[in-house]
Image (tube, rainbow, N blue to C red; front, side, top):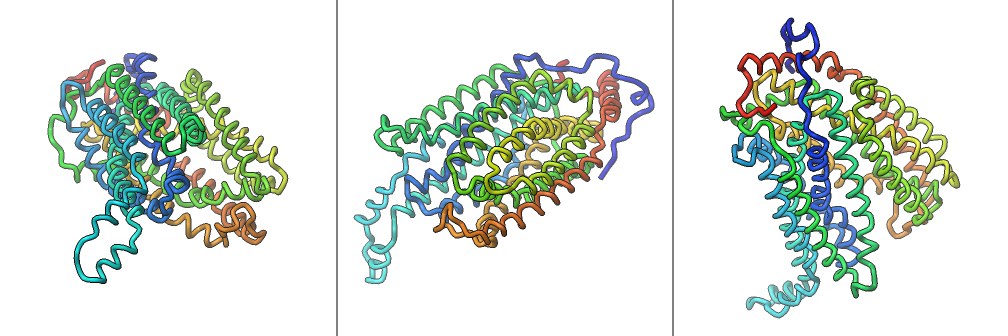
Length: 504
C-alpha cells in the first residue's frame, strides 16, 4: 500500500480558496436518486412475496437471487471502469444512471407478470420420444421451472441495472463537494431520501393485499407499474438536475487491471474493505439471528408487536433522524472529524453490544425497543462518516495517479460487499440450522434453540464491535491530513497539472 506524499508548501497552510461545493438544490437532485436505486431493488425486497403468493420454491428463489448477484459483482468493476473512461456530452455518469433506470423500470414490472399457469403450455406441448421421456416430461412441475427461468433472467438483468445505477450515482455524489465537512452533508441528504424510499417499500406488501385489487398478484403488478414510473421520474431528476465536474477526465486510457490494482494501494480504502468484511461476516451472523432473538425471545413470539415497534415506529424515527442530520451533518463533522467521530460511534457501538446481552430477556419488549431507538442517531452518524470517506479516498488516488476513478472505487467496494452478502445469504440457512431452528415450529421454537441463538449471536456482535473499534484507529483521513491533500491538488490545478474538464 502506498502512502500519499504532500509537498511542504501544500502542508504549510489551509487552501488558498474555498473548496468547491454544489448548490443545495443540486445535492437534493442527486440525493433523491436513492429513490430510483431502491425502486430497482423493490423486487428483491419482496422476494418472500414470490413464495407466499406465486408459490415458488424458496430454494429456487435463493438460486435465482444468489447466482445473479455473484455475476453482477464480477461485472461491477468493469462497468465502473467503463464509466470512468467514458466521454459524452452528458458526462461520464448521467447516461449510465438514466439508462439503467429506464431498463430497470421495465424489469421491475415484468418480473411480476410471470404465472404458474405458464407450465400448462409445456404440458400440452410434450415432445415425441421414448416412454421414459414422456414420463419424465409429465411428472415435471413446469410451472415452477418456467417461473424460475423467467425470474433468473429478469433478476440477472435487474442486478446489473441496480449495480450500474448504484455505483454511478455514488461516483456522481463523490464529485459534489471538495469540502471535507460538506461531504458528510451530501451523504446525509442521500440517507434521508433512502430512508424515505425504505418507508415506501415497507408498505408495498400490505398495499398489495388490499381487496380493491382483487387479488395480491394483480395488486403487486399494478404497484410495480407505479414503482417503475417513480424510478424513471427519479432518474430524470438526477439527469437534468445535476452537472458533472470531471466531464473530460481520464483522457489517457488505462486498462482495467492496472486501475483495479491501483485502488488496492490506497491504505484508507483497504480499511473500508475490511470494515465490509467485518460487517458482513461477524455482524452478519448477528444479523441472521437478531430478528429471531428479538421477536421470539424478547417479544415472546409476538411477531406483529415486534414489527410495529422495531419495524414501523423505529423506521419512522430513523427517517426523522435522517431529516435532522441533513442540516447538521457538516457541523458535526467540523467539530469531531470523521476519524474521531467514527471512533466515538464505534466505542458506543461496543457499549451497545455489551448492554444488549443484559437486556435481552423475555418480556423486556419496551426496554429493547427504547435501547434500539437510543442508538438510531449514533448508528446514523457513524454510517454517514463511513460513507463520506469515499470522496476523500478518491482525492488521495488522484494525488497518486492523476486519475479520477470514483466509479471504479465504488464498484470495487460494492463488489466485495455483494460477494460477502451472497455468501451470508447462502450461509444463513446453515446458521439457523446450527441453532436447531425448525421452520415447522414457526414462532414456537424450543428454549434450547433460543439459547443457542443467544450464544451464537452475542459473541459475534461483541467481537465485531471490537474489531470495528480497532479498525477506526487506523483510518488516516483526519481533517489535517485531508487539508494537505486538498492543498496539493489545488496547487497542481493552479499550476496547470489539473485534468481538463474540471469546472470550478
